[in-house]
Length: 466
Image 1 (cartoon, rainbow, N blue to C red):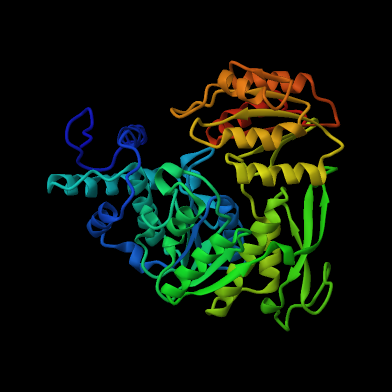
Image 2 (spheres, rainbow, N blue to C red):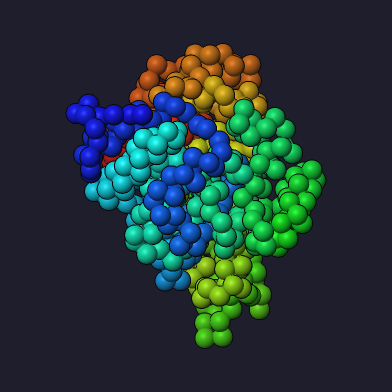
């Protein structure tokens, strides 16, 4: 059990003590299973049973889908909480209500309360909850105290044994794209990983799943839904048409057309963008080819919410998707030159990122900054991404599982002749900027763990160009 330097913990911590506490308990790592989480929530009055959830699992796209759903619900006047992980830039961003993050004082208060519950558990001989269990419990407590009508809940890593899976009766279970990731914890093949992630599906629940290309994944999802008597709806990005992408100019957006007839309100006057009785033009401020797939998934989820009684209209969906924000996914940091960061950290995400480049940026010189974790599919990522680059710089993320940048450069050298390791993120940014002109895109991708440092570095060096 962790103890403060000043003795037994007796009440609300300071902000500094909170960070020390979370850092200390994080050393125990991840422990899959729900027993500890059930014990912890028993101590906290099982407040999660008084909330309504949209539960989101998958390998890629979870954060974007959560952001889109949150924005749609906010436009509909529904008080929506959102809990995502891991944090990219700030721990506070993981906890949001209507797009606004938790304030430090409230964060300290709920973490302090959860810590006291943990210490009561440990005093009775139970295990100390993991850092993810503590933070998830704190989110439940905060959302309950703040009277959230719906909570959009992203799994941490898996599904079936993920701490978030303590919830009993979600409004909708959402499964984004499924690919190889976290094999050590989730299973060594796609079938095992799909079954683990499908573990969020509950008896009689509604399920929205991005339609997998692999038949074996579809078979798993359909089997689990049959076993649980769940209603399965596939979201299919192929049904989105008239996709247009405008990467030039200061207002970068992409548009597509998709049926919104289920939201049609006879009092809503079809205005700009109206195409037919069934189809509506939708504008996304989130860039990246893969965001069309994520938007279709969010739309199909909103259709289920509409079906079960939520007042969500066509204009709520359109405005929600237009206003949705999710930093770290093809986020533009600077326009002169174009500087983009993307959290693609596995082969599936790299494939989707490469498709975005091929669709909208073939007339740009491409410079990469790459930093990865050693346990990710870096070889496959490099094979997919490097043929599109003119130059690549590697870095070592500030993370205990980081792959050394020099070793990464050696791997990347197998696929490209212009790869240089940089000792710091700042050095990589300086070198990339020195080689860039107005027809250059600098793209930083890989581990989320170095994107905060990258963003701050780019901000300092390009303040007048953004």
